[in-house]
Image 1 (cartoon, rainbow, N blue to C red):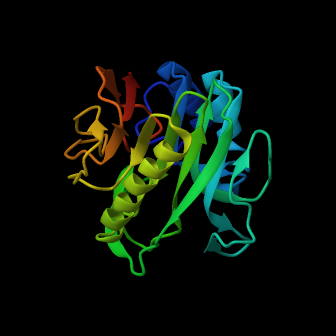
Image 2 (image 1 turned 45 degrees about the vertical axis):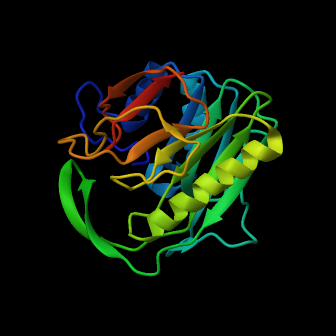
Image 3 (image 1 turned 90 degrees about the vertical axis):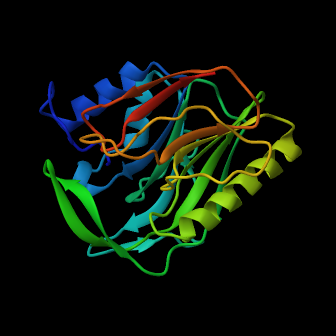
Length: 251
């Protein structure tokens, strides 16, 4: 929720709460959804760079999903910057997903999915209160960081069925294609907006835990998947700046 104070306890300033939340994760790679980029509602800051700084990471990439114009928002088009990064910065007011990293990626890649053609009523947190709104979908995509020893993908799929399910299948297919092309293990993190996953062979889910909403968790819609069987340790954290729990996984 772009660093909004959802359940304030210790902090009264959203940016301070976000910085503290990120630094407390002590992670090597962050995969974060619902990030603002020079958006006026969050003081026109580069949240990806702020998140990277709080994590002690030197590298970040932001994948815009909609553009913020003076009097409206619009979905991403081919003429817009497709990936904005620490190596290729841009001040385009927008909203999307981010990967930050200690390790330098060799390459950033984008994969676009179909956007839902209709909206639905849903409950979000507004000024500390669950509020029902009618929401329309925006552009959906995934961001991949290609490292010398692994591939990490971050995504935020549609909240509307069956577009989320169809995108999930495309996501797994893309992950398999990247594994074959680069001969590296693939990890997929993100908010899939799916309560139940339907796997093809070759994928492992590294944790099972309710993740949403933080004020009364009753479903898992956030996941970390991988192509390698692994023993993991994970921790589920309820932070002040998100309506989802943060999942910290050590592989």
